Length: 287
Image (cartoon, rainbow, N blue to C red; front, side, top):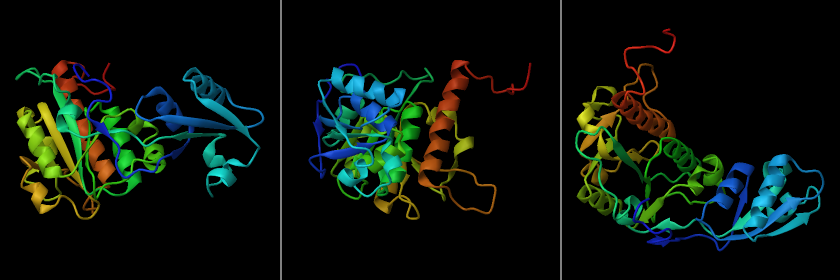
């Protein structure tokens, strides 16, 4: 991001000194990013897949120590997970570094998209999402939708450890993640930087698919609440538009990560239509 130095405004909060990361996607992402201090790579002895060999090569190119461990001993050394969960490789690394200010999240010198350009910049803010699997799934969707980053709180928020990283398929290792003491103040900071705040709310007055484009372009912060509880009343007061996803069946709501996917990719679809990458009047089956 232009003007923002890597590592500027970063901090680590309530994290163990060393995280044990498992899964090839997670380890690849951690090795490729600069968001963790890399400590040690452990590889099961014996025949290795091309994917594991490539990870070992990457680790050594980063100056990381690589150790072999006896077969079927990764679970004994690192926990009670079945051996196949480790996929023959484990990375010890420091906690995921996070940003501490909204300015660092969006980039202090980054210009807002010009009015009428149809471009958008998105931040996803989470209000009380404490399940690391939900956090990871949202991070995976957010990275796929090319958002600027995630805005979390220091408390009432899921840890950024191995569970979240595995659920994100490593996406959270690549994302900008900002933790702030107070979500409402964080949203105020986004508003001062020109963001509209959109809150996902099953009782919202605006239908997502019927919202005018002008409300969903430029800078948009999408706020998602906890499973079952939704957005807190104090958070709703900061929301500019309460948006609902129209439901057609008997189920009254979606999982928070599924809802985030629907909203983010509706924003992405609209941008693609405006850019001419998608013809809204033509189906994929048309010649």
